[in-house]
Length: 262
Image (cartoon, rainbow, N blue to C red):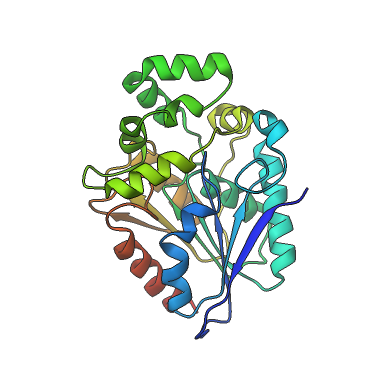
């Protein structure tokens, strides 16, 4: 499987451990490269982004509907083996769920930061909320076995991902870049491949967005506590923390936390 794995070198590298960014549902490597990658390379980190199979420029689009969370976990392993060093993992939403799976078994990473992560007990509550807000889109998506209906309008993308004050250009560009997600992966996170957290030796930070439409705060916090991680809520920000209005505040918080763990 040929995967899009992009490397961004810092011109003033001061951190030994690079960062590997793992995207969420319907996103790809691009979602990190607009804001977070320039910020963290400027802070002295080498950065890597990955597009999971079927996403971005990676292979596998012909089978996208049926890729599983375990397939995506295999992609993460491929990226980690390519990088070699013990990186810091930063994952968003589904990417955070994949990192949780990794933390259950592996320890060859320096730290893990999970943004708006799908909780360990799944996304049923968020799915019910989404179905109530967009019943026709939810019905269409399940009939088509596709998440594409949720990125058909800027209103839907804004509701699910962003704050009301989001830059219209970011909203338009995000809508243009969003794609369908694997229906199998969605079912995995709904009920098919859930897990019980267990304490990890890896320092872990769980960042919750105060205005997250998708991820329930109580389930997010319970997941963080189960892994023995630090839970923090970022005020005034929505689900797509790395692109939303207060992305820089979140990035600075992450940088400060990493500096304390090194």
